[in-house]
Length: 255
Image 1 (cartoon, rainbow, N blue to C red):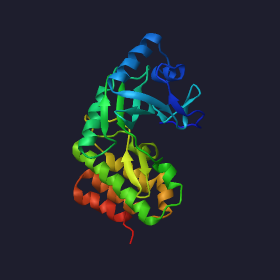
Image 2 (image 1 turned 180 degrees about the vertical axis):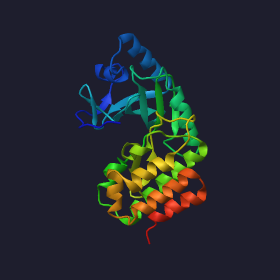
Image 3 (image 1 turned 30 degrees about the horizontal axis):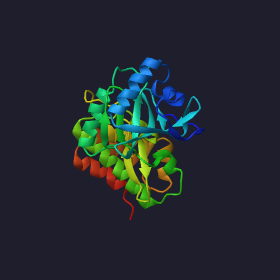
Image 4 (image 1 turned 90 degrees about the vertical axis):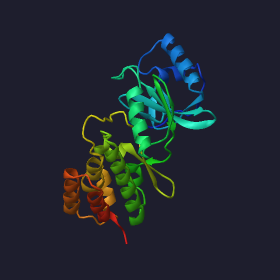
């Protein structure tokens, strides 16, 4: 999801022009807006909120991708993440992503799915910073180890479930780290698939331990030999066993 400087925050009144730009992005009609408002009400959404670093038509939102926009919303008395299918998305509904998200949830991965319809997904809101933002802050070896191990454990769960996330070679945008406990959450399953071989540990391991901005930041506090990481990841790629995962995790143990 692309991120830009926020310029607006607060509740977007249902029926307002600001909300219309978001619900029918990048183009829409009054008819489509009315239909989507009705769809939202059917999901139990009572309020939508601006806020975030992505800006659409002067209104800040939580995120934007090729398939959808993400905003905060209140549904059934709880704050959630609302993913809105773009009018120009390369798919007619959100149903495939919902199916993949359910598989991820079944493996104990991703924000809990709360509800969905043709054009919307409601999920728990993953509070926190992207792993790229978090890694640029003041972190110690124990935190870096815990986050890396948690992320790779979740990737292994996805591999075991046969679900390939599809974008974990870019962990900077798809892992959220939150709280003093540095809890990690993998998000955004719009590119996921059960048709191709699941290679989540291999993809994320490359970004966390070998190359890229996150790997470089983690290397400041994790004394991981790059060649050892490459070797362990190659071995796991050939044979996705628990033993081979443990060999990767052992590289980031901090005494």
